[in-house]
Every structure is written in C-alpha cells, then in structure tokens.
Amino acid sequence: MKTLTRFLIVCLALLMASDIAVAQRNRNLLAIPDVAKKDIICFALYTVHDGTLKLTAQLYPLSSDDPRTVRLEVEKDGKWVEVARTNVIEQGWTAPFRVENWDDTQAAKYRVRHGNEARYEGVIRKNPVDKDEIVVAGFTGNSIMPAHGGDISRQDIIDNVRKIDADILFFSGDQVYDHKRHYAAWLKFGRDFGPIIKDRPTLTLPDDHDVGQPNLWGESGKISTLSGAADGGYSQPGVYVREVERAQTSHFPDPADPHKIGQGIEVWFTNLNWGNIDFAILEDRKFKTGPAGRVPKQGPRPDHINDPNYDPASVDVPGAVLMGDRQLQFIDAWAKDWQNAKMKVALSQTIFCGGAHIHGSANGRLHADMDSNGWPQSGRNRALESLRKAFAFHYAGDQHLATIFHHGIDEHRDAIWSFCVPSIANLYLRWWEPLEPGKNREPGSPEYTGDHLDGFDNKVTNYAAANPEKMPAGNILNTRAAGFGVVRFNTKTRDITMECWPRNVDITDPNSQQYAGWPRTISQFDNFNPPSWGKLGEVTFDIADPVVQVIDAKSNEVLYTVRANGKSFTPVAPKGKTFLIKAGKDQPTKTVAKQARVNGAHIEAKLAD
Picture 1: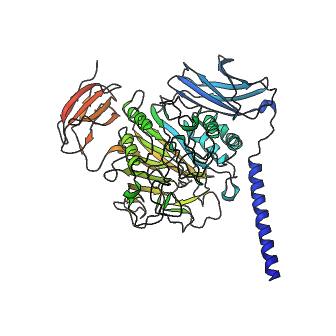
Picture 2: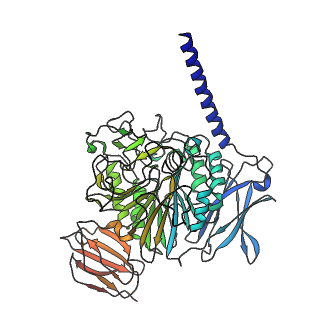
Picture 3: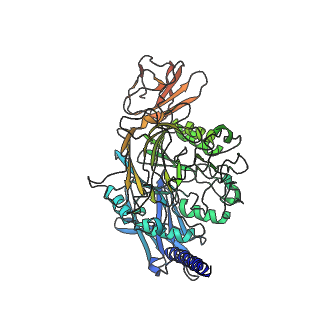
C-alpha cells in the first residue's frame, strides 16, 4: 500500500512538473521583449477605402519619458514628407492614423516614426483596379501552443504570400489565443506576420479567443457571468474588449453604422472596396444571443446537443438574434450598391451552418453546436437571404476544419457558397463526417459530400472537407489539417477559385498538393441560382457591365441586384410570377421590362445617354 501511495505521489509530482513546464514555456512565448528605442514600433496595418487611408501602428511599451507622438511619412519625389501625426493610446500602445484625399492610383512608400530613432517602413499599394485577378489569402486559428505545432515558424506562410503576391490578407479570427494577455500575444502576431502585413491591406477580425473567451455570443455587449459564456455576453471587462478591437480593427474603413453597445464597446462592421471587389466586413458574434436559459439543455453544455432525436425547431426560439437588425440593414443596403464594384464578398468569423460532426477527438460526435452560425436557424436564414441578393461569396474561418459548402434555405443550393479556411495551427480538431451519404453527389466524390441537413436541419451541400487524421502523428501541423486558404477573384470572367493549402509546402511548385477537394472554381452567379428557378428572357444592353435589378412585380420585393458581365444578362427567377427588370450604368435607374416571365422574350435595353 505504501509503495502504491509513493508511486501515485511520484506520478502526481511528474504531472505537476509537466504542467508547470508547459505554463512556463507559454509564458516565455509571450514575453514582451525589451527592445531598443529604434525598434519600438512592432508593426503596422492599413486599409485604403473611398479615398481614405487608415493605418494603425502597434508599439512596444513606452517609458515615462518617451514622446507620445507618432508621425506618418510618405515618400514623394525621393523625399520623405509627413502626412499625419497622432498620439499614442497607452492602453494597448496603438497609434491610429487617418489620411483623407489619399491618391490610390499609385503606390507609395511609407514610414512610421517615433522619436529620433524608430522607423518602420512599408508600402501602401495602389488600388488594383487594372488587375483581372484579385488574390486574397485567408487565415484563422493562430495558436502558438507547442503541443500541436503552434510554435513552428510561420516563414512558410510569409514565403508563399510573397510568391503569389496576395492583394489582401484576411485573418478571420483567433489571431490571439491567450485569454488574458492579448497585448503580448498581439505583439507576437505582429512579429510573425508583420513582414507581409506592412505591404498590403490586411483585415483582422477579432473572434472569441481574441477577446478572451472560448466561445462568444456577444449579445450586444452584456456581461457574461457563466463559465463558458453560453449565457451571452463578454467574459472580460469592456475595457479589455475595447483594447482588443482597437488593436485589430482601428485601421478598418469607418464603421457603416457607428454606435456603441453595452460596456461602451463599439461596432466595426463596414465594407472595403478594393480592386473592383466590394468586401462586407461582418461581425457575426457581437450581437448573437447566448443559448443558456433560452433553449432546452440537451447535452452536457448549454450550447451542445447530443440527442440526434431532438426537434431542431425547439431551439429556434423567438427573439434569438444572430446578426442584429442594424447590421442586417447594412447588408441589405450594401447588396444594392454596386458603385465601383464588379463582385461582392462577405468576410466574417465563421460560416452559416453546423460545419462539423465530430469535435475534439475521433469519438467526439456532437449532433449540433450552437456556437456555430447554424443557430439560430431563423437568424441564419435571414443573413443568407440578404447576402444572396448580392450574389456574395462567403469567406470565413474558425471551425478548425476547412470546408466548401453551398448553402440552402428553402431548397438545397438556393443561396451562397462559403469557404472556411483551415487553422494556421490547429488547437482543436473537428471532422465533417455525416452518418448518411450525401444526396446528389458529384460522380466519384466522397460520401460525405452532397446534399445534407446539418444538426439544426439547415440545408447544406458539401463539396470538400479537409478532415484531419483520426490519430494525428508525424508532421504535427498537416496531420492536424493545418494550413491556409487562397481565393482568386477574376473580375473579368467573374470566376471564383478556392485553394486550400497545407503548411510547409511551396504553393507555386506544380508538385505541391492541396487538400482533397481543392481547388474548386465557381461562378459569381452561382451564389444565387436556385435549382427550381427558371430563366427570364435574355436582356441585351448598349453599354457594357450595367447594374441589373430584378423586382417581384406584385410584392415590389427586390430579388437581387448584380452587375452584369458584358452586354448581355439572362436573369433567373421563380416560375409562375412576373418581374420588373431595372438597369443602369452604376445604378438600376431605368425600367427595361415590366412583365418579365420565365422563358419570356428577349429584351433589348437602351441605357446609353
């Protein structure tokens, strides 16, 4: 008995020592270096939209006698010219700049300066409106934990982004995993990715781990009091959340509907027009209702449903919010506005469905997860209804599992497509593994593809899933299905090509392999082409690429607004109804048909002045 007791004590001591060692290693990873004055600027992020440059410089901590002013200079005719200066915000040590009347028709070298020694240089790119293909590199899940390869260098990502010369970087969330030291982890993020961020527009969307909690149902800024935060709201104080959002989003274009929610937290949903593509930057966590106390608990956690026989309608409770009314109003207006835009893209934290069946480990089957945007179903459908009216493609992350879905509301495949990118380093494994083969699969495709219902009875069609190995081993990154995404938007053909790459490969090498199911190319117009609809008569125009709007003649509801490609367009619409068709160079101001029907006659529209 004494021997067993000694053995258990030794085992416990070894476990405690191991835990202490891991904790110490993690602390070392997030140690804030004591840098020289010349290196006090860690990195800088920027966007340019509608003639306004917004750039945020991230500084290391300043000493009490350091100046609090930071300057922004650009090179003009071989000389450095100051164009803005700003005061440092000490909580988080950020320096946000704003320069209006920015000329985006040419590139400009810039440098951020602090004091007499510190200089940080980069390039503000010209707006690539002359390019046919806009390349957006997408990332999520930037864990730094060594246990699953998080401490492995990001140099492969840096090299690949430079090789493809990405036009935009999109980080969908979880740039930071430490729940109490965002500032220290954000500095490390900047040291890792700053070399590519400094030279191109970058969007960093804060998600749950960024603001210091495992899941986020923000519920318009309320305070969460439940472990796991399933009661809705924020676990960290509002001042912490505001610091996180200031660091990660203050360089975004101005908010579309600026206002404050609970705890003084601001909103940042907006749009970025770059390269003739209009990107909606969405917050799909901030306004979402928490499930605890509102829906029947049907698993060990308020947000997990383990009973496959439950009634999905029972959790779609009245009053449950996903996107929030004001954000939906923004999306509705954005969907109709095609000024300087040929294509529309929605960027958000995660996809609008339950995109995984197995969570954590190979035997962790979960029927439904209310942390996903598959819940609440009514909110999910309302968001898809708005986005499909713009033929918007959805680019997102968070799921720890790369997927391609074509979403459905009333029928399969009647809404938008989504691409969820893989994690940079995969902290938490998930698998898309339905129990029944999908219907209407493509020939030769895996059984997990095809038409399915997710755990909330949402209609989804899967085309690819980068499932990790059931027992990850060997290369700790790629057996865990780590990687990143690349989407190529061709504004000339209106094609969208999705690529999904594992880590530590040269993506320009013809021998490098993407995850199974990629690449896949779709048309912009596939984002709203329900199988049950038919074609109205072809419309031809006397100008190229007009904006076209289709309206239900009886209800006056706008079905959709889109920019045609070329001098002809064949609208799709429900059968058995009549429709108005409007068109114009940049706005649909002229009615070109009043009683259009499926299989109707050709329409000739004269739009030139």
